[in-house]
Image 1 (cartoon, rainbow, N blue to C red):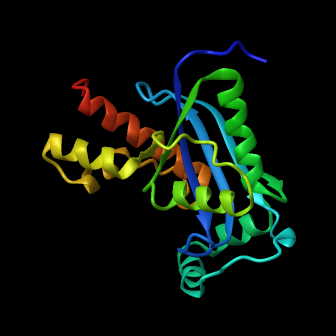
Image 2: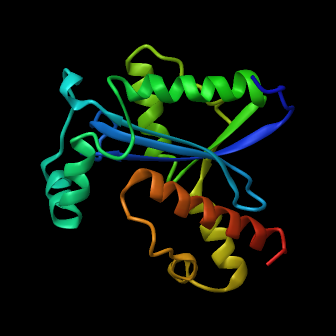
Length: 198
């Protein structure tokens, strides 16, 4: 075990789901600890749900169709448990990972999601629904879309243009771990814009 460090650590989150309601099936959770100043990723979390063990979950037909039109091969691989650690309870796996970081390495995790009313809220509501405590303090949820908007305003450009500037063709969109890497790069860039370093 490492020596506990004082202060906060940034964690980027991305989830993949089969719906847009908060009780929908989450089948992949990925996250990375990162340095917001440099964009350096220091540790990854990537777990895929063993859907054979899911007793009940909401699946939205329009989201399923969207997946089939967007990247059916990726959906097939993820549901077939390829590309990450497999767990019967990915929510508990993620909670334990965050608890370890906050219990042994840092005082607080600042959890970034690409819209806190989606990724972060889905996790919070589903964890509470299963009787788990949401491991992030109420003031520590962070929003990728907000920092992107502020950076674009400061630069006098569109949000899309910033995303295009940072686009990495090595990454597969909608694979949660690749999305996390892209979002880390985006947030670090926007942070440095806002701090006047770019």
